[in-house]
Every structure is written in C-alpha cells, then in structure tokens.
Image 1 (tube, rainbow, N blue to C red):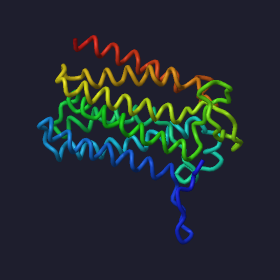
Image 2: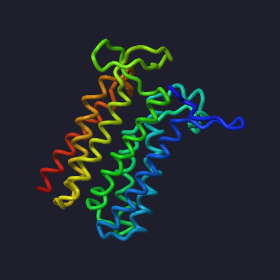
Image 3: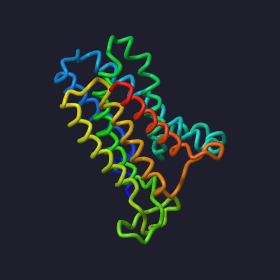
Image 4: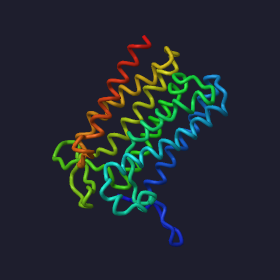
Length: 243
C-alpha cells in the first residue's frame, strides 16, 4: 500500500522497517516497565531483551531467506538489504527461544518468569509489526468475495478483493497482548503466561495462515503450518506439565 513511508532529500524511509523498529521499541519499553512491576532487576531484564530481540531480528530474516533460498543464492547481497522487507516472524520466535537458553542463565534470570513477561511484549510487537506488513504490501491474503474482503495489493502488485490477512494477524496480536497481560496480573504458576501465549498464537496462526496468498515451503513442507502446530503442541504440553 505504502511501502515508502516518507522520502526526504532523496532518502527513503520504508514502512516495513519503521514498523518493525517500533515493534522492537514497544517491546523494550514494555519490558522495562514490567520488570519494575515484577520486582526483577531492570538491567539484566533489559540486557536480555536487547540480546533476544537482536536474535529475533536475525531469525526472521534467516527463515525468510530459507524460503527464498534460490533467489538469495543468486543475489547474496540482497540478504542484508532491508528496504524490500523480507521477514518470517515465526523464525524470530524460534531464534529467541533458542538464544534464551544461553542468555537468561548467563544473566541469572529465571527462564519461565522472564518468558512470562516477554510473552505479552512480543504479542504487542506482533500487532505493530503486522501493520507494517499491511503498509508494505507483503503477506497478502488470498482473493475472496467473502464479507471481510478488502481491496488490497497482492504479490503481483494488482489490487483485488482479498482477505486482509495482515490486519487480521495484527488484531490477533493485540488481542493476545491484552489476554496474556491480564493473565499475568492474576499471578499464575510461573510459565502459565508463556505456554498459554504459545498455544493461543499457534492456534491463531493455524487459522489465519491458510488465508494468505502465498504459502511458504521448504522441501515441499508448509513451514509456517508445521511451526504453528509445534507451538500448539509445546504450549499444551508445557501448560499441563506445570499444572
């Protein structure tokens, strides 16, 4: 829709990059505030959040690159060019979870308690980042004549009535933010917020993924569908284990 947010003296500022940055900042500010509420040491929490967000930014790019490996083999420099977008958010989550197994013990932070804080922050960031996808025109929905169709551009740049998949995922992120934050304030068993958020986001992604115009695959496997299924299984298993 508006891939270039603004242009000043020949410098283009891209909506996808700006919204991804705002999502990271919002998550960082939220964690700063929640660390105070939870009585956790602020600087270790902020240091962990910064390191994990960096890992997440690398993960979203790497999974995108894996989906488009043929293109990046021919144009390797494009991997580091963010103006054209190119991110797979589930790759970011996987990278953050993996990195946290090293980062959190090093900073003497409890793994489950920290992820209970980070889960609402990531949902908030998701809501912001997916709006960036809407402005950029990526992650477009399938053409439909259904009641929720909006006239939006697709991968080919042509405007057609489509499922507003980016907007639906943004709204899902905001709804999960409210839900997980409210759950956190009930002071549940450590890990409850994280595993509940993992389960609910997996379910939301499983429902919304088929609405997309393009289904990314690796070796013929719909990676987002499989990752969403793994999230559902992990969330349900973790929730039952701590209760």
